[in-house]
Amino acid sequence: MRHLIDITDLSVEEIEGLMDTAADIVAHPENYRDRCRYKKLATLFFEPSTRTRLSFEAAMMELGGQVLGIPEASSSSAAKGESMADTAKIVSGYADIIAMRHPLEGAALAAAGKADVPVINAGDGGHCHPTQTLTDLFAIRRELGRLTHLTVGLCGDLKYGRTVHSLIAAMSRYPGVTFVSVSPEELRLPDYVTAAMEKAGIPHRETADLEGALPELDVLYMTRIQRERFADPAVYERLKDSYVLDTDKMKKAKETMCVLHPLPRVNEIHPAVDADPRAAYFRQAVGGKYMRMALILKLLAEREAPASLPQGEPAPHRCRNPRCITRVEQALPLLQKDGRCIYCETII
Image (tube, rainbow, N blue to C red; front, side):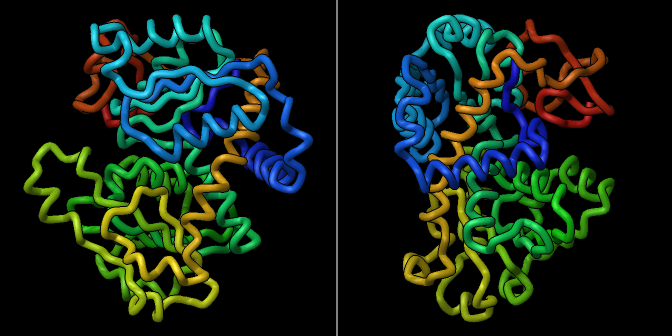
């Protein structure tokens, strides 16, 4: 059946169709109030979340459906050692569709391999976050009217920022898009992301200078430095305030630029920026509910579609990434594609 594990599971045409559906939901909500009547969404969140979990739940409720779920790992049998694959198998007997967040990379793929209902990846560690990307694309199209011929600045934690990785994968398929990544040396984009851009011929440059990059940007995508991704708290403390967007810096930006942020923010956007009409992050977050409504409708309608899970070859040994789901769940088949772990994309 159809799942959404990575944003590239959707074609550009499908993404455009989801945005069209979301726009129609905004304009005509009354037409969608009973579309998921008698359907249940299971939200399996093994990592803290506000916007993603609540927007999924609100989306299902506004479609007339119901929600059941796990708000944290300690309240599930995962705390007793149950595998993610087994959890997904059991929960798919109780619900019609699953949205899952997990701190380990590849967890959603492991779940989808065993579940009997569609699985939506709501964020797997520092790997990817496809529904946030749908939210981001919808926001850019609403703010700027297009997704083509844009210069997109990505600022902050680009190493562990799953939202950034998914956004690059999605926007690389639109013509005329250039990326400017702004980060400390320690938080640069992972090699698999930059390698994919180079292979596709996507214009991209790296810098540590936010103010110098601002004048050329059409979109500034800010991210927080994520405390939960650092093994060494001292490194986090040193890097946490690397970039702060304030009203003085905004004076250097285009009048048409939009500022996005997957949220939550900490110190990286000063609250005074909220009053700037170019600050679109709160509008962006609300739009995520409509995109998730559109996605739920699509996956339920295509439940009998051919499986969309990636295929791979046996890997010679276990993935070296300590955050990969295969390091915890020993029963998972070790698979690779093009020399990379199929679960987390780390070089084997």
